[in-house]
Length: 390
Image (cartoon, rainbow, N blue to C red; front, top):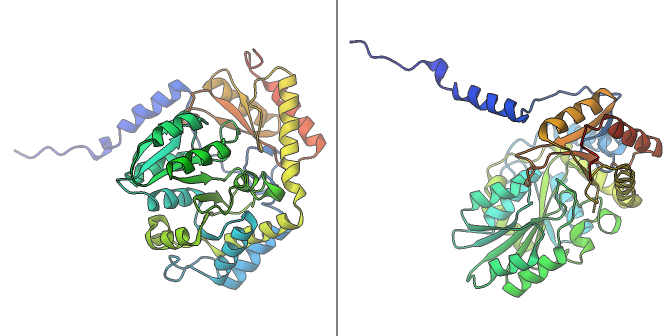
């Protein structure tokens, strides 16, 4: 009897059922390649300071590519570290107020590096429930005992840390990407010090927006450079480039160089990205008012939208989150905004920890008063039924 072999066409047939389930829930995600230039007013990107296309940022990328080539050519420990990487690390650490920095290929990789390298099976990791997916994944990959505590709740974090013997970390975003609210960093720091734990903070949404001249949320909280504090951040938001970094005591950075898998086994950040980030960093130092302007735009968007009856979270940085009646309504709202010339973000489950769908607006510091008015008018004109219910 000939042996019956499974049909190769059925191996991934289960994905069709999963897709149908997403369609019924209004949770299908699709890629939309954008052109190099567009007439859409962009409030969806994380380009908080409007530096991605700034001539100095672009020139930094071009000059770095011409000098160092298109790629880093290898991992940082082999051939992937250039003098440019070291220069960026020195200036980034000095700007943010830390002893040392380590640049990686993304902010995601930076979070994985920091959490996994600073913990083991005997470590307790306490994680804020609102943390970014990269922190969630870092906790899982660390194999440490992880306890997720209610959002922005130092008291519960203290209870989680109490009585633990051995190493412990408290991990939190500085500014949470869904609602744009800031973490209680002073409270978290006090909890950590009472328990002898380390504080690891992802400052992706704070760099360039919070702190003196955009030096970040930890700088604003007086925690930058503390011996028990580590920061992670991204170069892809306020600095308009790509990549990530870990900042902290020099001995922590040396430890990561030798143990962080997302650093050791990954190709170094492309020179063009490093050059662009360094150019943006220097521009921000010369023009520190850009940080305050981003916060001002966020406040104006929030004030005008809520005054018109929409429900939005008060922004602590540059993210303005506007609630939608449902996932399907949020998707339709974002599409209607796009058809009207406004590009906004649309956050739906599983990207939102509370299950509430939202429009997510980026309060870019380079928006004009006219563009702010246009954005608000468009959002109000396309709002679905129920969006303005109190």
